[in-house]
Image (spheres, rainbow, N blue to C red):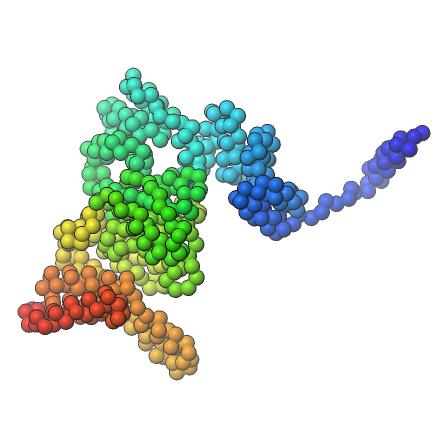
Length: 517
């Protein structure tokens, strides 16, 4: 017998003895999920850098460390897809989906494989399934929009055909409006309203169809006659535009704001344009990014909100860590957009500043707590927003705000908010004094936090002083201007201006202030 035969016989006999005697097979090495996660992170980093060989090796090692790793399988699928290995990519994505049926990346991968294989119906089914589970998946919207395209421009023969076109071409606003109009003509007003509302968040794709949809919606549904449409021009820097589906990401961000704030503001924010700007030459501070945005966005609409978005990480230390900033009662804002899909708390917070929202203390559950995580609006800010919900966006305080508000009601809403804010500051200072008896260092730190400059609250105090002046309460207006000067800082330009305004009021005399305040 040959050596090969003897070897095979020996191996076979050993296996038979092991089975017969019940000897267990050698155990598989235990999974190392932490090691696998680290290797996957390194693989994804290599993949983003375009180093497919390193990415492939790291994903393979991750899968050996943890055979159940879904992320490693998805990573290997992405590498295979870029190498035009559609069969290998499909197998990897399918195995990931088997292990995690709700995996969006796996299903998106399968959609890409199906599309590149010419199986467009399968690709569409995957994308629709993703969006059924996650409305906020911008990439799925972008791919489905490209896949579904535009409907025929010939008039639909009947209602059924109009509805079919709207279903088959969900990002074609002309088809969506035609379906809504056909439903309205058939007497199905509720269905027509739902259809028309469903296309508003895509307004920039077909402004004419969006305007027609809004006009018809207002006529059909009394609830919409009280709402206002606010134009939004959005600008994204390179960190945002480097991601696929970035336009849909911004459209979805404004859709989320509209839905979240609708009960309070009765406003629908409609995207008008989606443009780019460069911030790579600026530092990562919001002031620097805002300056780059303003320098480049010189030809902008004179109406509506102007919003700049970045995904650049904040710098360390002080105000550089801010996630967003907005003009108080103005029309400009800058936001670091969260990477996670879904409503952006930062954007919601800054939009409320455009409607006069005021910061609240750190221990208050509110969207206006910059350090918090709540998505609710505290009662004081809700009162302010209800008074300011009718404000306009043309760039002037007089025309946009003062001409449309109820002066006494708005003044009262702000006085209540400032009263609570100042009371909390005084309470903090009192606590610091009490702490001084046992811990002077901690007391000094607490007192510094209470006395620190607050330009935002200075803006609020200055605006309320204007309301008080118009309400013929000059002494109260002068007091708030002096408070604003301290909040700005006496050596700042705004601080000096507020102090000078207060002095002018005092010099004019306040004897005519019948309130005595």
